[in-house]
Length: 468
Ligand SMILES: Cc1cc2nc3c(=O)[nH]c(=O)nc-3n(C[C@H](O)[C@H](O)[C@H](O)COP(=O)(O)OP(=O)(O)OC[C@H]3O[C@@H](n4cnc5c(N)ncnc54)[C@H](O)[C@@H]3O)c2cc1C
Image (tube, rainbow, N blue to C red; front, side, top):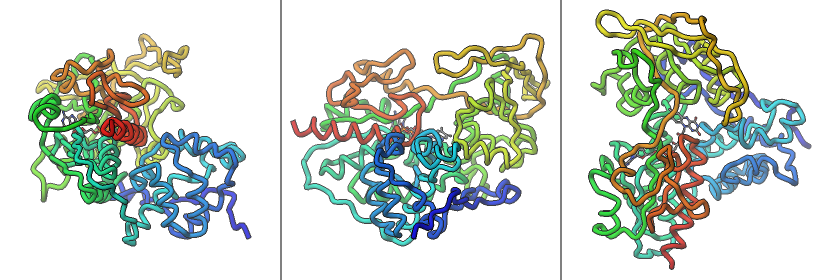
């Protein structure tokens, strides 16, 4: 008998009044029964529209049908055929813009919120297997004698490393920071992605034989040329991400109390600044916080500030609700946590006190005009609409560009006007022979699953190149 329920299983969350006082994960995940019930809602459509919506093409109806009969082992294997980190992607993928957007059940209900909650089942399956020690051991091919260097340990580098190691190559990751994981470690907060989960994934990577060299800045410690010509690497994959924050370029931006959201989040997540029993990293304590931008970075920064004692936090964004780029769930959680959304507002100037500290921001009101190149309606400033928002901390989260170091030290690699590496779309090889690139360094600031997908695509091409 099909017990499938009409409506999506609700996932439990920590209560907002409790969670704004701790760093623990907000979303508590499905129970086994809920995962089964939710999986049963899948109609197993012949055309599999959800698979087309998944950037790495996971066979979603297959894993849901396996989960629906409680065979979580098989469901996880099905997901892992296409995706390396299901416990991470189940938590951070923008499913409502990808697989769940295409789900027939959601379309029947005329609401993406009623689509099969694919991400939540993915997360459950991965967590269940990990917590019960049932993750299967991957098969590793016999040693090829070939060496590959990976620059950066974010999702792109990690995915590339895993596939190459499984193919028998000797793989070394070089990571500039003192912990592996890229944005998964330094950017996305603990309350959204517990670091123990990221650590476990990197332990799995090391178990495949991948060597991770931390505190190694390629372009300074070693150059790409040295890796290839002195250190004996047969190929290089660059997954160095987009870690260079954009700023507003308005008067007052150099004031004390203006930080990029990246720096703020790194201090908290990577350096654990909030836990003074283990960390001596300072962070700005603030009562009123203005956060510019409305992507995931802005949501993470604003919700972190709230947890660190800010009484009021405002997301300030030039466009409207429809254009907000952050994951829907993060926006909903931010609102529940009392974050104010000042939509259709743009910054004019940052105001400072006599000591050069931030005391407020002058904002313009905006209206939406015709769509711009991104397809979104262009914000237009309303002259004479200025107002002041009082605040003692400004966090800037208006996008990131690629770090220029490798470009500067490796002029053979061609880049576009934004500084992103230009690659052959089929192989992800750069203009330098044997050097491949993927993830945010190619795509610009994108998503975890797209970065992982590119890491895997490059690994397949490197594998062929090494066999030539
Ligand atoms: C705060 C925040 C929240 C986000 N939330 C989401 C989300 O919810 N969902 C989602 O899908 N995406 C999210 N993203 C985007 C996503 O995290 C990125 O698209 C993804 O991490 C890109 O992966 P990557 O491997 O290309 O780069 P990164 O994750 O940036 O990793 C690059 C790594 O390379 C290292 N590196 C850089 N230069 C060098 C060098 N010269 N030598 C050695 N190492 C170097 C860096 O230290 C870093 O560890 C978020 C991003 C941020 C910043």
